[in-house]
Length: 228
Image (cartoon, rainbow, N blue to C red; front, side, top):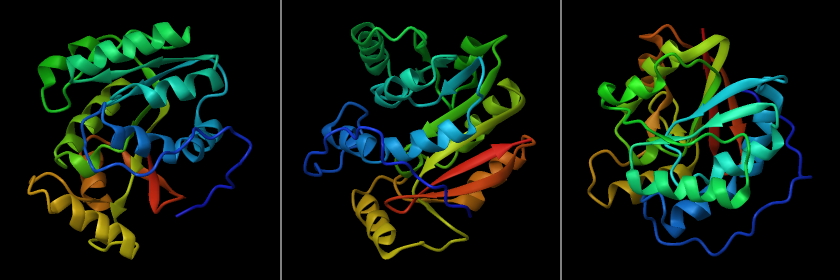
């Protein structure tokens, strides 16, 4: 695993007290979690994303916070938000209008478990694709959809970036991640809980994608970078 030198020069959004866990994409908890590591993620993307013109796809964009936070730093890249939730698609549209972002496209509906919704991507290619903080509150099966889409729609040399907390070979990397997993599972929702990098990589491998790099980030999270 690698550890990139992380800049502290970006303006960090204010962080309120940690709200009660709630995975709804428009909840205060998701907003809090999104702000917590946005700058370390941004620094990785600055190092890894294409330097020239290009197209970037975000899976499970939620409120659109990340894509609107990142987009101004990459004026040569066009960002495509997506989500399965109609409610948040409208929120993303409103945020794009309010921020005046010229390089954020209109969001598309994309259900990672329903290939019939993937036609919205027909004919499109992306130089990078990313997903942030989804696996701990989603079934590991979505890795199949993410890998399938990435393999089909990434340009040659493009990469898939997956951010979040994960287990490594069945083991929690820190006591705090183990406690977080226990908290998630206490809600009784079968798909909630930390997923193992090995399971995500297995799905990626099925579509010709390999784990190229694992980047350690603050708060015991990782960015997994997949490519051909």
